[in-house]
Length: 301
Image (cartoon, rainbow, N blue to C red):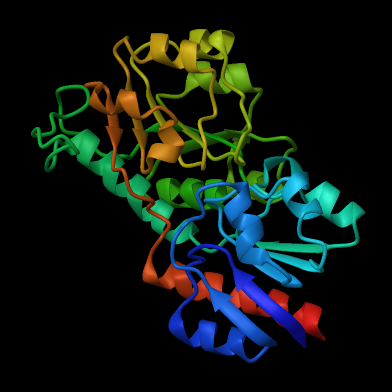
């Protein structure tokens, strides 16, 4: 049993999961607001041996050093790689601290968001986030059938988006760090990134946080008359190159400001940002809670 567990900020656990966490330690504290700085994080952790953290705070090596009783850090958010994490995972593990994270809990909502936006864009249904009536993308109402769609990053969410678009009749190709045998079996074509950008009308970037693949050369290959979706947790591009590209005859879609990166771009007429995370649904919170609890229980023996 843990001595003391502290959730330093809102961690999105459902009520029943919070009650179960309370049974895993002699003392448990859930903070309901985000700490302002490192000093506040350290003060909240105090003498705890377990910390729960969401994606909204960054846990640096300095913070870890200032929390000498820590044995466990539970990330209640995605952990795909140490490099993309908001916790200094490598340093923590070097200090003998166990760090766990979760993944694949909010993808279903993201897929629904993508399909909804693409259908609205092609058919001219509804209104954009600024309240303006949506005009069909190329002035003619059309289906997803026959769309050339490119997926950059064919992980869980990228694969689900590909499957959803294929259901509607899209022609799917992808770029990823490695070729996927299961994708080949589905008829998805692997392509080098620049070829993928040139071929497809709509591109979806489904990358880990803090991964940048799009620079000026990539936007030059993408060209004009294209639609770009970002479903990641951070921009996948160089800011200057993106801002130049979006001035052309192009459209950009994302769900959250984090995915857009620069709040000042919200007013741009070619940018459609919902300003809400499509993956934060009730079902996603259920899945998140189950996975966070499983990590705690496994560590606690």
